[in-house]
Image 1 (tube, rainbow, N blue to C red):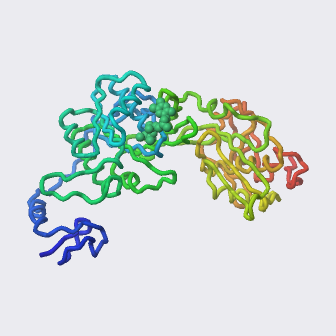
Image 2: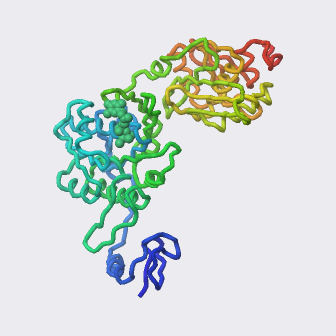
Image 3: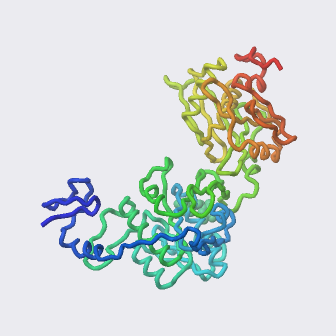
Length: 464
Ligand code: TYD
Ligand code: MG
């Protein structure tokens, strides 16, 4: 009697707990159990037919607005019936809150919607829902961790929106009598995939828009949700800092429209509210006239956000200089410090350097290089920069300033929020009239424009 691995298809004579070929556990099954299945597959009519692309009916792919404006904006209109969306984010960031608001908004329009709560009890969800506003009649809750139970309830009640919170907390039990249970505990990659597979099948066959919640750790790790990205139509990422109120919603993948739209929310006592003017929110508590801070127009998706970058330079506390970032790319900071050392005669090898973005935003784009350098120099010299000054540009290893994407939009946002001068790479095209462009070819040139002449790099001030 032979055993076949369900994963790689290899056969062995002896049963073992682990497939000797691919190394997967609990995948070996006796051939004669598989036999009927193999015969059934053989009997299938596998003739497929190609059709004209232009004749494909697209009327079903229309998005349906949920009623939560920022959510709909990111999805270019709303959720498409039969589509599967994965909402990823760190625990505690507000995924459950956001989706409860989406469900309530949709139900308030008279639709039947279902929340599958696998992590929280119906009691807990009810309490939260009360904080968020009136609870519409069409909002149903199912407390279960069994995917089969979800399928059964959807079959019975036919909702048009299902939220599964979370995909890591559910598991797929045996699908029929005599079938083996898939290996792995809830949350393991096998279970997450198996569960998602069934839910994707449900979404497609019943034309129900389905949203899966997936917890992702800070570094984007956690195999589970990442392994799902190719199975779903849309991947949304909900970001922010738990200690700040601002939340960003981004489409990482979207089969029904462009990615790059940014949704902005503020977490309040009554749930998430759309942020109308992020500039004011982010720059609201800024201290001006203090060294170490500079404004930078950052791109988040296709939207521009004015953020404040801060730096602190302190005498080295331990035997090694410390470089620490919050919301910035640590490698780029190290590189920028090397550029300062080599090209602007400002060695910081005996100093600890801290750099951060205020407001819980992440700005890892190279366009932040110059602003980071300006903040570090300002902190190191104890020389504050003008409050209406912004800096923007990628820094090359030769100390040159390079052009960045979306320059016109960034400059417009600067103008809108009253930024009077922006240090930019020399090749920058003219911007709005209200903004004075301080063009510089290199880091020393940019520094010479903003700091007093008696600094280490004096003499490199451009002759013009
Ligand atoms: P939650 O939606 O449970 O996060 P996730 O599902 O991503 O794990 O939100 C958790 C946090 O949001 C929690 O710390 C409390 C906070 N919160 C508010 O500040 N205001 C509110 O109205 C609600 C419902 C939650
Ligand atoms: Mg949750």
